[in-house]
Image 1 (tube, rainbow, N blue to C red):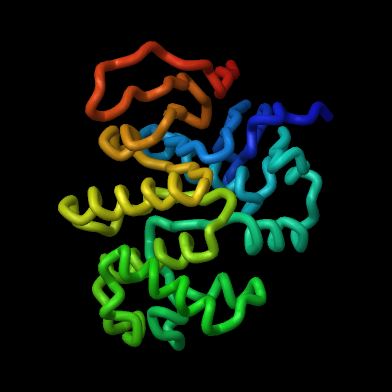
Image 2 (cartoon, rainbow, N blue to C red):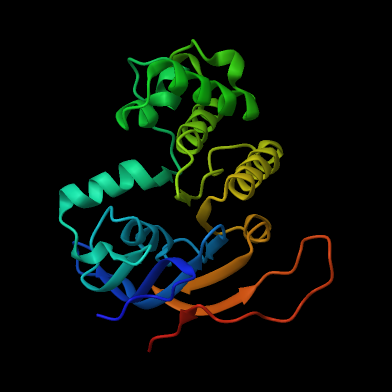
Length: 249
């Protein structure tokens, strides 16, 4: 094994993955993500975006290839070690909001912190801060059944941000939101990531969402087809930056 570059907090080489039905999910994807970077993984539905995030985060093991986090080989870890890594260092946002129905809103948002051993008072304060930023602070004592679908998704985003993870994996995080709400939530997410030094890997099929990232990786049929540095949204187009994803044929 060859260790990844020192400036990459997350690094993958030649990832291959097949779904249970035998269909290919990833076919030789390689990439590097720098610390504090917001990386968009774009492509049409079924292109392998979610599969790539699941492999990078250790939710599933690739059939072949390597995944490294801070020079630690994730691909050689057992299930218990990968679970600890996800609990202690990673955050995750699904396209569909899933909350614990027995807990109220702030308890759901504070749950990852309390699982890490953070005291109830500190965990509650962190959860309430993010709930306020995402405009659901007034719902803190409600239960998930009392919320709208969009409100539940905002709580899930607060839950992912409250522990200040090293890497946040966001799989189509604004999918359940109305278009008018998406811009605010995405601004909150990207601003939080930059102010707290959180590395973000964001899967999206929308060009407007990808434009908020520092760089984008495009997938098609499980293959990486292009990587470009995106210019600032309000500025002139800039030249392409270094490629961090290799095409495998």
